[in-house]
Amino acid sequence: MIQLSKGADRIYGEAAFEVLAKAQELERKGKSILHFEIGEPDMETPDNIAKAGIKAIQDKKTHYVPSIGLLELRKSVQDEIEKTRGYRPDLEQVVITPGLKPGIFFSMLAIINQGDEVIYQDPGYPTYGSVTSFIGGKSIPIPLLEENEFRMNPDDIKDKITGKTKLIIINSPQNPTGSVMTKSELEDIAMLAEEHDIYIVSDEIYSKMTYDTNHYTPTSRDEAKKRSVLLDGFSKYYAMTGWRLGYMIAPKKMAERLQDFLVSAVSCTAAFTQWAGVEALTGNQSFISEMMTRFKEKRDTIVKGLNTIPGFKCLFPKGAFYAFPNIKETGMNSQECADHLLYKAGVAALPGTAFGPYGEGYLRFSYATTLENIDIAINKIKESF
Image (tube, rainbow, N blue to C red; front, side, top):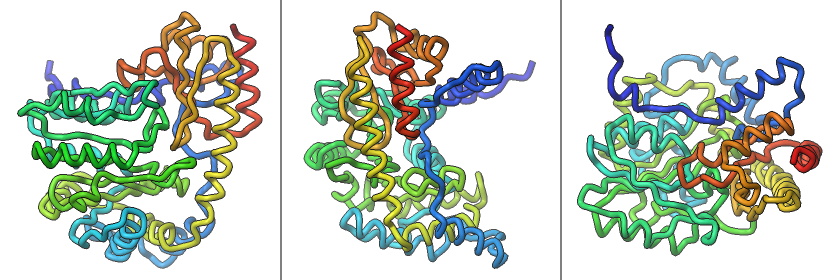
């Protein structure tokens, strides 16, 4: 029998969609399920952005565009990075992608050779390990510890660097823990990368989603001109998950290759989606502050509620929209506890191990839902024990 490639056997998916499928199967059988498993804002795309996309379609902007992205959107991204990160990338550094995941995938494809070591956070976003495995790289997970508020420690990275280390991946604000790294921590990691000639890929998809703290980027040290790549997008804080729109700031030589990757893989990002992106970056930004005010109330409600459940202990996340409670005192492991909540309480959450082995003893709740659902879920969980 003809076999698939070895890489095809090494790549893997995301537990969030597996849990969603289980929850939907229970719903088909008549059981009521409260959903905390999917990381998606519970708001709709702002009207001004949606109308810009609709107008682009009506204006017949539905054809091929340059694979690197529309000039108008790339210029808007230049302005955005200057405003939010403090440096202005060259236009040749800006690459538009159909969502942020292709940015993760393509940047790793451009950097990693078989056998290269890749350092990333654990628990962390599953795509980093999956793509590393697919390419044939070696995963070097850095444990995120509760006593350090789940921030990646630069000293732990330093201890793991070898002659084979090629890439450090940073996600801050972070999925699944909601941690936000400090400016000094990111500067220390950028210095390590420079000292050892290692690339940094900085996934900043939650950059506008922080609570009582600021977002910083490790790419400011070299302005993404030598060894760092900044990834960001529109899915989270503009509620545009289905629009599939992201961007990369990369060294010029890498950006040239990334353009070829896009040509080969997707041709280009949809034109009307990109025009919606221009409006997102240049239009009224009040939607974000309003959204974050609501998310802060939801964060406070779910964390306080989780801390009233026997065996649960939860820190207040500094960013994103995830709570990551410690459930070790329940006597269950992460998968057992997640299954208990799903089948006994009708609450869909993710086991911490969905994000790596160091997630054992934790669960992830996406609190992108209503305050009423949060209160109901807390009560149902309490009643289930």
